[in-house]
Length: 142
Image 1: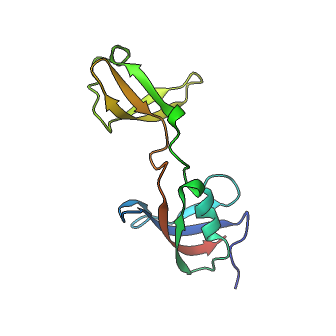
Image 2 (image 1 turned 90 degrees about the vertical axis):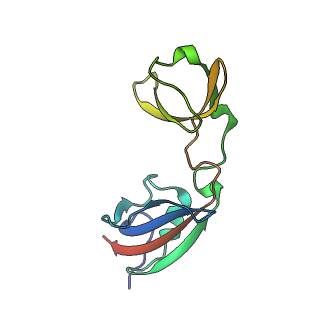
Image 3 (image 1 turned 180 degrees about the vertical axis):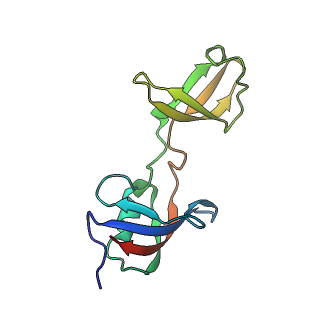
């Protein structure tokens, strides 16, 4: 029976959970995730968890934050004067905002603090600083 190796294209069902058991993402009720390994499209711990799995095999992998989205980086917190925000935006903690980068691409930010004259936004990935658990079921090696 074949097993997953580096650079294989696979289809996998998954459920991702935080360390408190809260589900943050799942393929349940959808088509399995179809992905080519070795392309950098998966977090390292998820990709390593798939290696050596056989079709229909199930397993649970615990991924340390270093193999997921890394630590929260303080340099990705920025203070913005409220006067720089569009008038229709009334910032609240945990509110998601979109910022346009100089190259025209967009980046999602999260409001971390709201003060009298400014706000602090967090540009870290929402799962940065979290250890993750994934329940995996390999559907197919293509």
